Amino acid sequence: MKTKLFDQKWKEVWDIELNDSIFWLELNEGLVHRALVYQLANNRIAIAHTKTRWERRGSTRKIYRQKGTGRARMGSNRSPIRKKGWVAFGPRNTTNFELSMNKKERRKALFCVLSSKLKNNELVILDTINFKEAKTKNMVEVFKNIPYEQKALLAIPSKNEMIEKSASNIPYVKSILVDYLNIKDLLKYKTLVLLKDSLENLNTLTK
Image 1 (cartoon, rainbow, N blue to C red):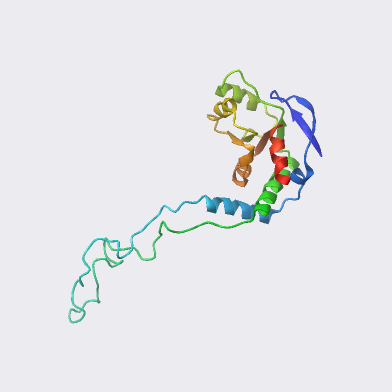
Image 2 (cartoon, one colour):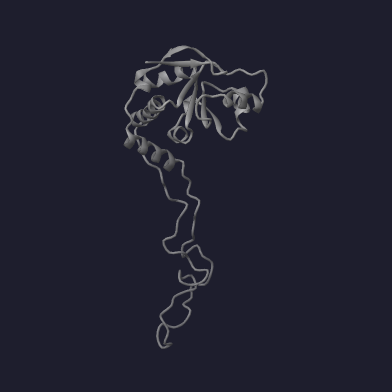
């Protein structure tokens, strides 16, 4: 299928052919949701950590005798019901949150979101972006006239210091290498801006 190709002033240059196996898939919401949960879970870091009975400082001596005091039985100061005692069933930083999902499913989920972007007019392809110098105002000027939602994810084919520096201080624009496109960013940013050369990188994923 074909779509419009724009220059950085958002003037239509010509039509460009897109790969149907990437941009013409039905949206599988269940698969996309699984891929999102997979990404979030695998990026999760266990920070919360509580100490067990044996990690707490303090005497292990029984506080008072078992019988004859009229009070409830009590062990050591490390008991979880006492101040500065250990935490029962508390979170540990050894918890593993990793999930598994095979490569073909993750790839198809990515293609489903890309297809959805195209069908909902949230995907735009630029011929190139060129500046004389890396300045935020140059990138602001580009996205000021975009005929789409300004909150955009800009996917570039390779490292480009000029583009990355120019976009780094704009809160509603994020630049990313097309090889690192992911479900979380695609769902967070309304518009996906692909440079023409980025399509070649995506086409290699279908081989």
